[in-house]
Amino acid sequence: MAESDGKPRPSLREALTQRIVGTESGATVPTSLRIAAAYAWRLLLVAAALALAIWLIIELKLLVIPLLVAILVTALLWPAFSFMLRHGMPRVPAIIIAVIGTLAIVAGLMWLVGWQVSVQWDQVKERTTGAVDALRAYLVHGPLGLTEAQIDDMLAQVWKVAQEQAELLWSGALAIGSTVGHIGTGFVLSVFILLCLLTDGAGIWRWMVRLFPQRARLAVDGAGRAGWNTLVNYARTQMLVATIDAVGIGLGAFLLGVPLAVPVAVLVFLGSFVPIVGAVVTGALAVFLALVYNGWWIALWMLVVVLGVQQLEGHILQPLLMGSAVKVHPLAVVLVVAGGAMIGGIPGALFAVPLAAFINVAAVYLTNRAWEGDKALDGVDLIWNTVPRTRKGSA
Image 1 (cartoon, rainbow, N blue to C red):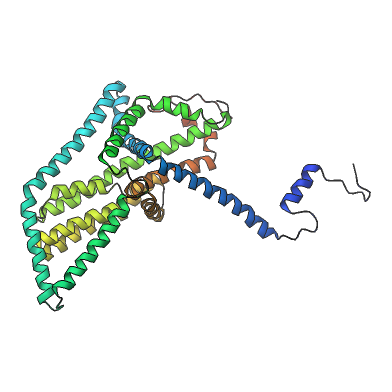
Image 2: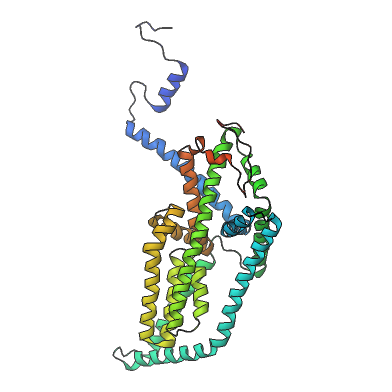
């Protein structure tokens, strides 16, 4: 139907759209402001959803952290586990070998650390006390001319700052727990989830995929597979980088005569799984031991070794290996680790990078609609096995 002036009458839908967006004649709201408002309320909704997710994670931290630990350990075990499956070993023996072998390696490293600490502890304690006394004497009788009270005040302030920082890390929003019972429960739950993932990862994934609408299942499945592959690559690459760091710094400490070389190497290996922060803390510990036990000259060479290994990691290993595995810029890694530590303490810093890598790859996969031409999804995977799929959105 036409109006009296000959112009077509807009439909009800067009009229409502014009009134909502403000495009009807006589609108006074600038277009730029309308666009900014549209982005603003969407960003507010996203922020609210993220806040709700973080709140739920904090409330369920005793379940979330063991789950994340189990997933990360599964990714670490995946190369060896999949190797055994590809070569015809039944799944149950492969699980037993992977899990028991990992526990045996960790227990062996802990025993070696405890043994060396027990052997060298008295000597290290004696040398450390002597070095501290010599430093105090230099501060009092040297050119600085400090008094004993001033030194005690400075030490008290340093100790207070160290306690505050340690409390901030250990009592993060996602701290594992404040009691031995929490830690023991988390360990048992992590092992149980790990066994479930290795035993029936395909069934768990099929169940998760079927929670989504039918048209979205193919995209969700492809994004999950892409994220899982990135997580496995991250774990494998981080294992290699951590091993190189531990061997380099531990061997340097041993050749320089620094005590507790094996415990330092183990701590460097474990600390390397927390990007940026772990390397700095464990490297500083090695230099500190060299300083109090061997003196300034050896400490200087130990610092050269630590910086050399970290430069090798930062400029060669990380760009070549981790860059291709994680596909996250180093600046983003630093910011993600810092944010994770602020929100979740040590667990937050540990899981920040793998979570960011998973989300990044899955988001890029969905944005590019890669599932529409991804022929690799039609195969059979050892952990996912088969997910019923067809093209064009049907399950």
